[in-house]
Length: 117
Length: 290
Image (cartoon, rainbow over all chains, first blue to last red; front, side):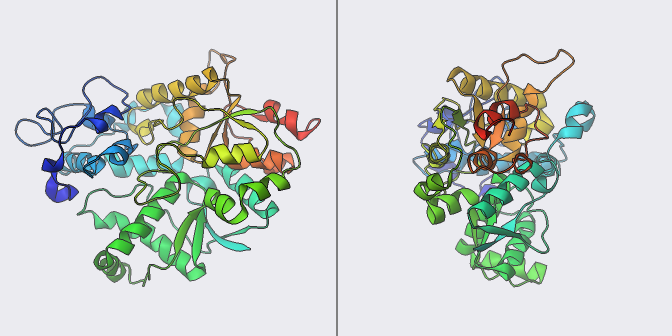
């Protein structure tokens, strides 16, 4: 994770300012880099959680971190590890056809680059 | 003043109204947005993995194209602006990476071009007082909620357009046009962004909350600078088989609001393809039937 993200996980002192800024669409906890339950799983790999999918990249956390930890880069590293292991996060067949017809081009390009390898 | 302009893919297709109104208001204010002669997609995402330099190639090509055209390049799309500005910053700070990309693209990007958003040009070159003087149809009484979203402002260290937690640029613009900027709690909250292609139900929920928050604050319209925010906020308000709820509010690009205030004809507003038609509201300030 540190290699891909270029970030220092141990710089996090768990102050929680990043979590407090999280706007999430699902259930579950908000991530903190140094928290024992996140963002990595017990084996050091990506946590088995939908949380990763629902990180919105709003970048509020990076604005608020007093230690200069770039949490979006850490989350991106987890996403990259998952994608490089063969996962694909978009199921095109499940998208409503009327939505697919109307989606802005940048949503398609950006979403595919972000969620599919 | 001629300014090289990068429209990006969405402003050439889905968000043509943003492009049209943007060019029209810039021209009305003496700024001629000249489209880059040969441009390509910026990639729509800025790579956050340090070992993913491939994703920097597309935006660097755009910056190279822009550098051939002048010292600065203007964008309207907040996401294009975000990607290009961060790439500009990243390659300024990492000359070795710039050399690496140049080696691959076989184009010599020199790192001299500056990426600007039209909002910056309005604020820093024209000025709000001058814009207010150019207004011929003041939007007096219009309650407009500025919706900043995320990528226009953050991360400040690399973008630097405005305060990332308490921005004022859209507020000031709305005020210069004679309208009333309405503060609301979700002004800076994420609409879901690309999540709309992965989990549309989630992004729709997030977006509905934003619209509801603006409506509760008394806003008659939302004002944004991002075509993905515009879509995410407007799409859930579309007419469905159940009709409309009746409490929709239009989601406007700031350039569309400007077009009305500057007295431009209705074809320059670029509002035809929106899910919530803003014309019934805007015509009140355009005079007669517009």
